[in-house]
Image 1: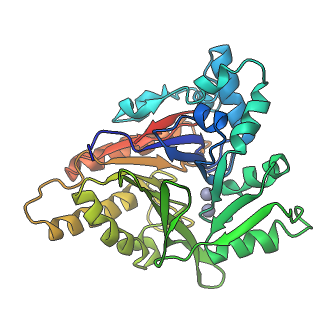
Image 2: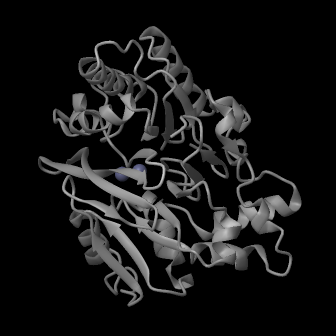
Amino acid sequence: MAVNTPTFEFTVLGCSGGPVAGKTCAFLLKPSSISFQQALENEVDCILALDAGAGIETIAEMIADCRKNTASVSSYFNQLYSNTEDPSYYSDNSGLMDTEPFEDVSKNSTNSSLQLAKGILNRMAAYIITHPHLDHVLGLVINSPCFTQQTQIYGTQQTIDNLKNHIFNDKVWPSLSYLSFNYLQPYTENLNITESIAVETFQVSHGITPPTEVYKSSAFLFTETNDKGKLLFFGDVESDLSSNTRYNQQIWLKVADYILAKELKAIVIECSSVDKKPGQPLFGHMTPTNLISELLNLRNICLEKEKATTHPLGGLNVLIIHVKETFDNLGDPRKQVLESLRGLNQIHDLRIKFTICMPGISYFI
Ligand SMILES: [Zn+2]
Ligand SMILES: [Zn+2]
């Protein structure tokens, strides 16, 4: 497998960690070898929805953007802050980016943007949910009346049971017969979830629920079964340092070999805010210092495995999601998070390529 051939198209519908609604975490993942238009035309269910904090409205907006030659979705954060930059500013590797992922779809002139978006929504092979917090499932709930076929929803037992018992329970939302809920077994199975994508599931810590129970979120390792390229995707997660667990360490031990084999194309992981003052709560999330401590652990594991390597994470794409909106005078928090990550990357000579994800953009990885 050539290192630079993209394996996946990773499309960002939303990547905010809240508390502003509308563009919270929602991503599409498919093999880069098939376009959205081909999936629509040939009715191939090859798209995975990874979390669903946004949905059809953003897809429709992105299609409308192509038609109107505007960029309202990818410049969404401009509406919130006066100092937001163009999406390429936020990437050490802007060659990954496609700012109009639905351009070919938008050329279908007989249908409205919303009709086309509904078409794409119904080409999902499955929804894969990291945890049931509302900023990760709102789109799935509100969009569910648009589903025209049996729709598969996957998650760990905790995620699925909470969705069924507390949301799709005929009280908060109807328990729709065309939703199929499926358990993913952490650590044990590598499930072929589409014809060409397999998924392995891991548990991660995402804070504490009262009185003292670890609240679990998930990470997923996706493998494109033809070229063996892999993507590691984390839901909300805190560092092992703050959780006092070894959940992340277990994942690093697993993926170190794939990094050394150049099979891991990217890590998608959260960094919710800039570093806090000592003692301030993190609510089960990452800050730049905590994220870098995790990546230093990963580097050390790689170095232990292969002593001849000098910069095992050099060139690795790490895509940052779930930055929370802020209300201070500093403006776009993504700039501060990125600046902090770039500084620490340099101090530790990690040579990672960081990208802060922006909505409306596909990253080819
Ligand atoms: Zn979240
Ligand atoms: Zn969460």
